[in-house]
Amino acid sequence: MKEIIVGENEQDKRFDRFLKGYLKEASGGFIYKMLRKKNITLNDKKSDGMEKLKKGDVIKIFFTDDTLNKFRGNESGANKECPELLSYKKIGDLNVIYEDDNIVLVDKPAGVLSQKSQKDDDSLNEWLIGYLLNKGDITAESLDTYRPSICNRLDRNTSGIVICAKSLVGARKMNELIKDRSVGKFYRTIVKGKIDADFSLKGFLSKDEKKNKVVILDKDPHDPAYSYVETEFHVVSFNREKDMTMLEVKLITGKPHQIRAHLAGIGHPILGDIKYGGKAYKGLNFQLLHSYRLEFPKNLKEPFEELSGKEFTAPLPKEFNVFE
Image (cartoon, rainbow, N blue to C red):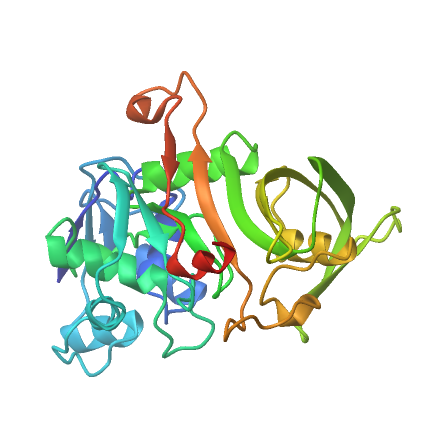
């Protein structure tokens, strides 16, 4: 028999949805059958699965260890090192800019995936779990019911700040702030050529998933495959000798490759961004784009009051020395 005590990261979930996540290899029909037969109970009572879980609720699953392992997707039951800990060790220590009970702000290096695209990939998502396991903030058992995760994604070769959620409360709040654009997201980049003044660009973006490339149209094509995008650009400085401009970029919307495609569209592709018309520079063959600064809104309530009105920055990586 397996007993689970509902914690803060599981509360407010509907019981059947919790079970479908926990018993990921079991069909919905099987789960409801087990509920009817009281092979799965909530607070020692029969359940239809519709209840909202509360902190302190007791879930009991009356399966043999072999059956539980089967429906958990771990038929071998082998006691192997957690793969997230292995990812953490492979990627190594990263710069943690800020951390509290609910979130971590991490400076992601270029070359590290935000989320894995294939089963055996190492990514920041796995690194986060390994980091928290290594610190003792979570346990392998707690991952059965809640998995910490990143809240915003950066391209593999885009570096800088990523918001990571340690708790369900943190994930919900950060995703809410990102969705309603309450968090100011600023990037630094270098483009070839001179840009004299600040400017903004608007358009309609569509992504070709097979080519992993986007196009931006000036006018609305009235096609659901296209999304409105808007970006603001501020000139930081111009290097006359190298004919390069450093820009600070503010995302008004946040779509894949938005900054890269917008700059390519005005004839100033990002240095190293070969995919969007840029050229390799002194061995740099990926886009020189860095998530530099985050600004949180004021008047955030508990437990996020520490973030109210705060600004966080990630130092420019060494690749930006090409500007000097």
